Length: 262
Image (tube, rainbow, N blue to C red; front, side, top):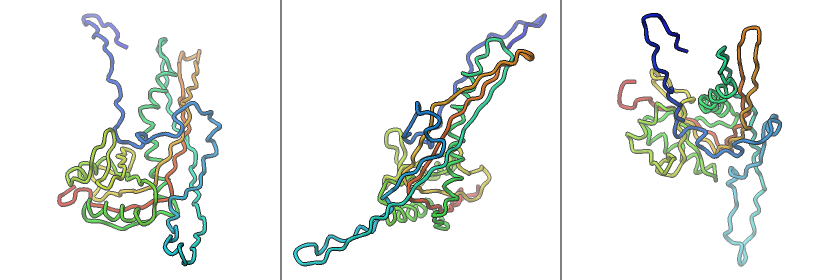
């Protein structure tokens, strides 16, 4: 709020810049429930049974005319996601301050970054995570990750990379843009996460490959309050999330700047 001061002319108030969503982030993937579901729908998390890691499908050779049939046991894998809340709060004494709208807008600006941070923590601590060691170059790293996926996963894998590593992949011609998405040459979807670990001074980075990602979330809910004693208008906006990754998880360590200093 600009206050007039004797001898000075108040500055003309103009609109502030609006936030631009980060492209290719985790929330660029399709959400199974983008809004409208009651908060109780996912409060205990979600679970489904995946067939994508049951690659022992047997052989059709010899079924006719005289071969023996080979029957493979049905062995789907349970995939679960734990719920978590993303919240944002604001407070102001201005009489025209719309606390609910501001809190909701603040939540929207930061929820992708927070969702990416939680997703990374969940996926890199799952018991079936496979550590593929280290690779000296981006092409070698992608080769090892995608070869692992090809032998162990029947679905469409997703590659998760820190924002800092995207220029490296582009410089090594490992990225193709297809519409509003990024893919590897093999067709693996790439998520570029500002919430994934990767500080400017890190000498090494970790790449994560998962199965297909599921995103369940409720509509944002803002709870407003007014303190008559202090004239404060406040609000807390929150959104319940559940994130899953299908039955594939592998990491590999790469130099942050292959061939050069970080």
